[in-house]
Amino acid sequence: MGRLRRKLSSRKSSEKQRSLSGSDLEMMSKFCSELQRVFDYLDVDGDGKISPAELQGCVTTVGGNVSVDEVKETVKLCDLNGDGLLDFEEFQKLMETGGEKEKNDTLKEAFAMYEMEGTGCITPTSLKRMLSRLGNSKSVQDCIAMIQKFDLNGDGVLSFEEFRIMMR
Image (cartoon, rainbow, N blue to C red):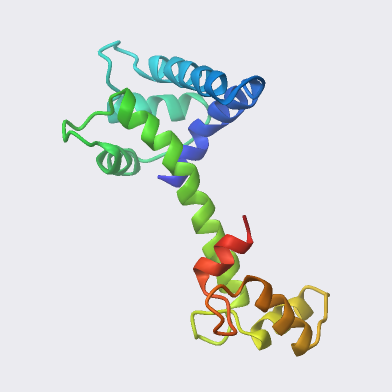
């Protein structure tokens, strides 16, 4: 789903960035209008729904390569009414939530780099090791102080949720 969303999001991102002036309401209105245009473009047969074949065809048109199974799985995950197609509301959710999932996946990868001791948390020692590998050596005491700034529950380590909040 991530690959598919990335192929489609380049249009959405540039269109969204063009509409960043004015009030939030105006911005949302413009974004929805732009998203509707993308939806209409993808809806080749004009039936008000995007089929897996239409979605795959568009990705191929913009130079991407996505398998039939990937497209079907994406549609299945977003298909709220179970008809095997994406209506505008379902498409909108795909475009809005796909970015969050990608961000979360990226944060999980980054968290895993710092969490080296198999505890599921970033400890002062694991933070020290990773910072040293990155050429930014710190003492364990410095790492304790860094962790304390974002340690919401006071347990002396950073959970993924605390790390995610810190990275916002």
